[in-house]
Length: 292
Length: 142
Ligand SMILES: [Fe+2]
View 1 (cartoon, each protein chain N blue to C red):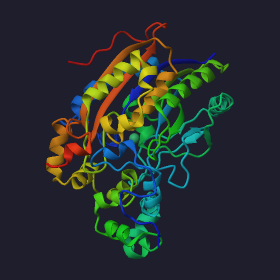
View 2: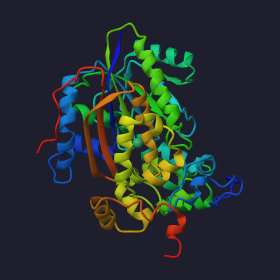
View 3: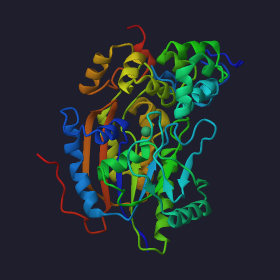
View 4: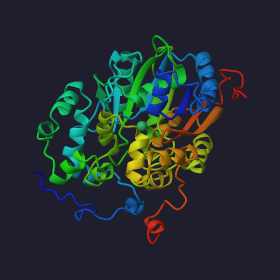
């Protein structure tokens, strides 16, 4: 059967994508950040998942206020990079996995998660930047991609608990798929940041680090944190962190934290990355450490 | 024209727990309803043809959208904070900033009333602390 091999939590900041696209990684502003994510790329190169389920949110790209699905699962053969106003990012289109995606859709809906099915869904920075973070600039993405788009822009986003339970349902779906795919799940967005209003620029490192701690050891507890606490403590756009709970729900109760990075700032955002493997499985790589 | 009042603090919903977060415009249903046309104008700039049309004739292009006079003025004068107060959402209004060639830090500086240099230095120094910025009462009387 197919297997969830790991979960990755990562921010999906557009400026990071632009830094990669325009080869700014060596600049003093960016070099410390890229040094911190280098071990994660090394892990990804060794883990080689066949499929990445990328949990992300659309930022007024594929969906507008005309239609606001809480959860939309991409079942297409191909997902094109969206034009967010600059012209599309110059990154490869993502190849989907329609058979597995349709299985996920069927399994989730029969499991009482009434997701929206998307046959056409251009992917914006929410989905493409995590791929760039993990894979840098390949000719083609080395994995198939199943995008799962979550509404976190129009209040209310789904609760943390709903997200956590959706992750568990995704796990049941993968476990029941007869193929032999090795699947990674990426929960993206965050960490603390506020783009809007007079409070723009809010960063709360204590919140971010506590979130990562609890994601590892007490996800059910973290799933009880309500929207107002995210809004107040992590900033109005920090609510994106509920998407990391979908990733966490797809893993075993006991996980091994194999890597963590945290960096302030990337543009207006506190940037975090975490890699989790199921504790019961053998480690995928030798221990990872940040380059000195 | 849109019959809704563009005023903030809409009277037709109960107070919310998050209303006392300072300098923050939670994009809830009320906000979304006020800002629908404004946000849909911004969204339209995702398409290159629309960007060209807006560049060629800004006034004529804005006529296509059911904006209030206040919203239209805020757009024309690029009042980024006021657009939020009139129902805008930052991910939508940022489309207009992209059209203008602005970065999120430039817009962040404008909304928070500082220069780009000050804003960008604040971020390098670790961002705006949550301490002192959680509740409206912490901002009042300063
Ligand atoms: Fe985002």
